Amino acid sequence: MEKFVDISGAELNVGDKVAVQYQQLFRIGVITGFTKKKVIVGFDFTTESHDLEYTKLNPWRLAKVVKQDIGLTDYYKYIQA
Image (cartoon, rainbow, N blue to C red):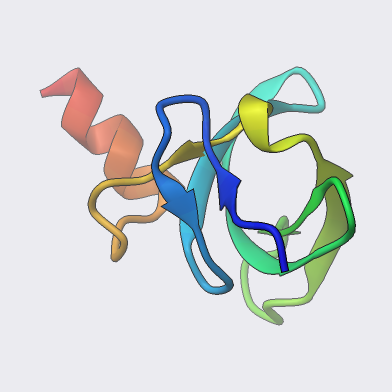
């Protein structure tokens, strides 16, 4: 299988959290798989059920999150500090 890399050249793997501009907002999602040319990313838009909404994105649109245990609310708290 071909290796996928993000915009900075970091290798992408299943389970990695990635940041991306999606549906006109900045979002953090999790990689759930790969197609021949795209990365399948799951986004959780719920507050309780953790049902993921999946989309296929080009790897060059993604940025691997350095701190893999961060959530989107943690990110906004960090940039506002």
